[in-house]
Image 1 (cartoon, rainbow, N blue to C red):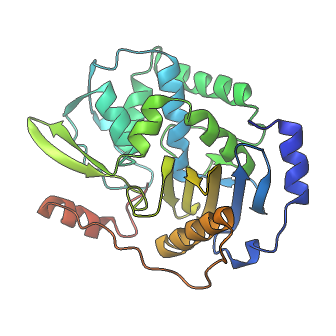
Image 2 (cartoon, helix red, strand yellow):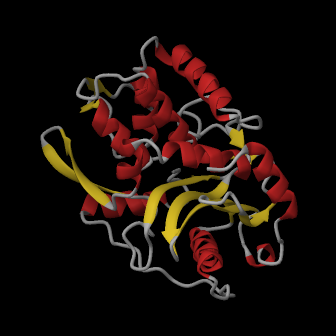
Length: 294
């Protein structure tokens, strides 16, 4: 654990020698066990955070201790009318709250996240009040969340605040388990349907990931937060506004190399992405290029 004052001081002292090699515009790497900042780049800038928002959504929902077996039906209210992003969660389909949490975190589905907030005890207004309370509890002084999905560019934060969110989220066993699952079968109208993690590093050889969440919108760029274990250390990684998935992956690999003490790599290393298992998934993946917001 690290204290806020120590973290702030260390950020000011953090070396920028490595940061020049990062494609992400904002980055932070913290040794969780000591609180030492191992790398930082523009870590106090306030920027859109896209679907990294969903970590806060999940914590606020779980803090309310709702019935996770309760069935919730996806409605037109849950459809994204702002960015018209794709979804594999059909309107009219009912899911347990537990399944919606899994879809929102692992597959980063926006309808699932919205349905979780809509069905929060007291409704959306009560949910947003819960978000504000959670932000105060975590000391998030530069974080603003106006809706549960991250689609709004007004959902903003800093790499520093996101490191706190990631550490807090990692203490929820459900969030840690879901975000580190590479895929799962979820019942959709009686048909087992495979959903995959939006972070292709999850389950990838050489990675011990303890928490993960990706994000993407046009305003936010490619974003990623992870809690990882490497070289006997626990670390928090935050990467914001990378230009593309390959750049984000390369940055994550470089941060891992900072942890292990290896030289940073100068060019992107191609990670073999898993192919969608079904024709529907392949079509969704193709349509989602440039439109899939996670």
